[in-house]
Image (cartoon, rainbow, N blue to C red; front, side, top):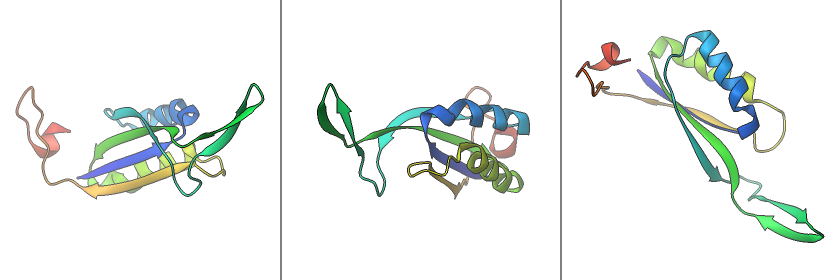
Length: 112
């Protein structure tokens, strides 16, 4: 099993969600997060005053999938979230050693 974690722009969230549901992903955890990459935030103008935004709002998606589906899920997220601009986000995978469904006690693949 793998944990696929993605950090994407908020306005791409619905497109990514729909694409993942079409693929057959049945569960995921989504969080609103803030951060920055190489661009270290950005500058905006409000009522004529310029100010720095150090932390940019993002959406973090976490999905546990079978090893065989991990590359497909990563590809779907990248293709759907990509705008071609700085700050599109990142996707990474991590190995998962064990999963337990709290309600039933099911373990590993049965818990997915």
